[in-house]
Amino acid sequence: MRFGLRAAFGAQARPPARRLALAALLGAAVAAGQAPWNLWAVALPALGLLTALVAAEARAARRIWLGWIGGAGYFAAALFWIVEPFLIDVARHGWMAPFALFLMAFGMALFWALAAVIAGLGRGSGTRALGFALGLAATDLLRGYIFTGFPWALVGHIWIGTPVMQAAAWIGPVGLTALTTLAAALPFLGRSLAMRAGLAAAAVLALGMVWIAGAARLAAPEPARDPAIRVRLVQPDADQRLKWQGDMWQVFLDRLLLASAEPAEKPLDLIVWPETAVPFLLERSGPFFEGELAVAARGVPVATGIQRSEGARYFNSLAVVDGSGKVGPVYDKWHLVPFGEYVPVAELAARFGFAAFAAQEGYGYTAGPGARVLDLGRAGKVLPLICYEAVFPQDLNAAPERADWILQITNDGWFGRAAGPYQHLAQAKLRAVEQGLPLLRAANTGVTAVIDAKGRVRQSLPLGAEGWFDSDVPPALPPTLYARTGDLPATIALAVAILALGLTRRRQSH
Image 1 (cartoon, one colour):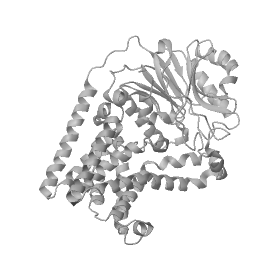
Image 2 (cartoon, helix red, strand yellow):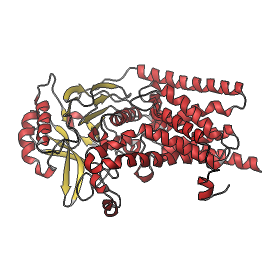
Image 3 (cartoon, helix red, strand yellow):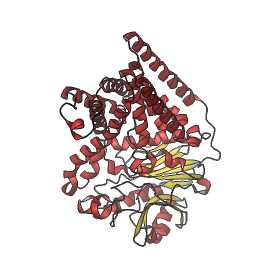
Image 4 (cartoon, helix red, strand yellow):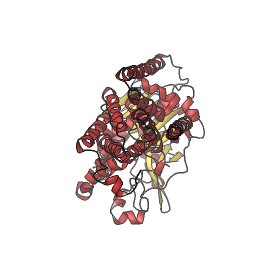
């Protein structure tokens, strides 16, 4: 195998333009399985055809090109909402939007190019299809951790909202990806048309069995939560373009106070406001907490997003304020968004304008010490998550003890009103299934929701609406296998399978 730029990018190394265009279109079709479209019946066959296209190419460089361009089509279609933060201030940052989408799509597609490299461990098209399937699962695992991680739009997410999602309680999100990619590749392991038809039927049967098992889990009775926990979730619809303009912060704060003051049919144990809901720093909020907030909440504790500082350091936090306005437990977000909440190599990045996206002057927030469970008395033990933290299953597994329920506060206003907020909500559903715990989320612009331990939305406020609702916290289920083992079994299984494929090729070459 030749290496170097000429070998990789020369005209002979690239597949014909038609095949590259087909790879991009198939990748985009796979993205149709992601929220808000949820077209898994389109995504799965498209993934199978893309796998066959990559596996049929015997030349390594061409195979990598096909994987890369297919991945670019996938990520461009799934993550097009990434332009939204640049459109908050169009005059200053709008010009960056197309470049951000281009870099995101083709940068993330390098993981699919790596999967195409792993496909090369197979000697024939059938084993290359198997290698590509394993490679996609392995790179979905890898991108959940490398460079602080970005496990958004995993292939296995196409099953969120279906009974197949229930399998995540045992195999986690990467296991869902492996199930999906192997099912898509299975028909192409056969050498004859009859064998391929039989393997396709086997793939459908396997997925059908998982579907039936998931449906049975959904239908199983649930334990009752005793005593009941009653929570009010408030959504002020604080549009990010207006949130800090003029006196608009007061408008949104008044919405939160008025919603909190509404009488409740049943006694409340907690009121929840979304991320950065309070426009003052925590250390300067005492008069507001002890005055307006305590009056509006009528003695009910309030969990709210707020910023706080320690000297020159700033934190994105969740603070719990008791019924008298005194500050209780405080949680600091610890998995921060690169270039959104902190700027890596800040001085250099600032020269190119990237510091403008950090949430605070001084190039962003400081990370908190790590996962934490808060004891909220009558409201139970809560695992808090702030926005982006809900996309990392390993962060929930890092909690020092098991909580009674999960609380996510978020500001999805940065994601616009297209696919981004719905994909964020979808991942929250998956976290609930993985942990066997209910998850309640309060969002500035939506979607605010109560999600039970099986990933079903029990109650919600739509995107772009102002409002509130009261709900009982759904019951928890026993700890799941995934909650106990995390990604370790999937990591071992994928490593062994890829190693076995490589050893098989080596034996066949001798």
